Length: 245
Image 1 (spheres, rainbow, N blue to C red):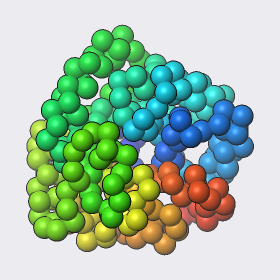
Image 2 (cartoon, rainbow, N blue to C red):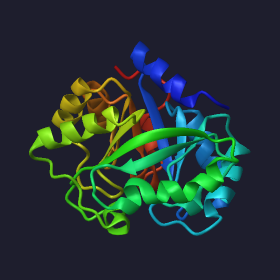
Image 3 (spheres, rainbow, N blue to C red):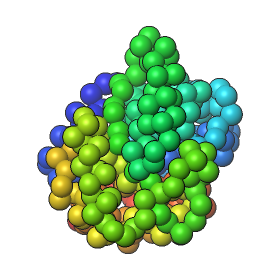
């Protein structure tokens, strides 16, 4: 399965909203995945992201292989480290943490991953990753040893996103972080989207159907949910296949 990026951009141009579920390999139980994937396939979910800030070695590969047994949805790596790269997925978000100034997550991890990626079949999608302050110290902040961007001034967030696009990032990802008290605000999403020509991903802290709709209406092209289904799998009942305006 290739051309995942092209399908995302095509959907964006048509105004079709996309939804990804983020599965953390360290939290996922292999024996439970078939049931979870069945619910995912009956929902609005269009992509499955796999990854986490801290994941045991080989855990990602095992989880991706198990997911592939039960769905044809595209599986996209959302790696917190080079050890999470597996050729069994379809694509990888090649994340650069542009909200921080730690060179390890701006370029060094990418250099370390080249040996794995050059011989893989993964579709590599350069992605500008922006961590937004959410009221909690998130795993991303702890592991990357960087601070999130404050919610104010918003212009700083907007300019960071635009800088990522000008650097050649094909996607911009606004992240409140796993376990965020509050999702990225509608105002931030709207103002960032107004400045971008590339698709916008928004994740972190989205736990209700209303928050999902608000993110879409504010300009998110693809929304990522993780904690919502980790804490309450019945969330899938709220996002059965039907049109979200």
